[in-house]
Image (cartoon, rainbow, N blue to C red; front, side, top):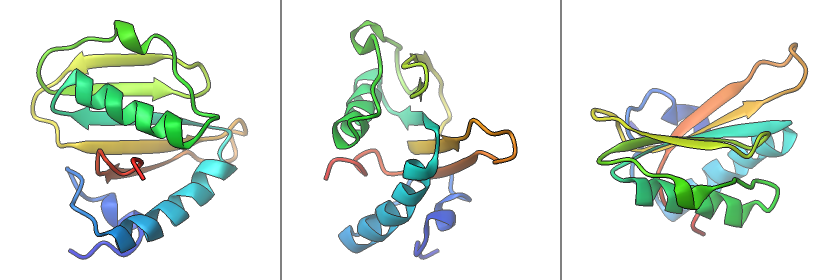
Length: 129
């Protein structure tokens, strides 16, 4: 399956390898949603807690308005699922086997009339540029 748009990722279990052009195009589309959301939640499926935290930090580095608390206190063994909430700044991590690998971004809205949308999985290095 060729990835041309953000929605093409939604049926995948793990993030695909993306070319620089694909990353640029998908990031442009994703940022429209991020900037229009009231806040986002981030889910990261990673092979280790260290990799998940590094990935979360790469998102905070790219977007100064997305900050999280107490990252140094996080720990889980083996493959993990990390969840961060931009609105509260809270982050949780748990060990979980059998997951794919990648980043899930959910755009949230204060108004109940607007439905939240989840995008991904994006590669763990997606926001490193």
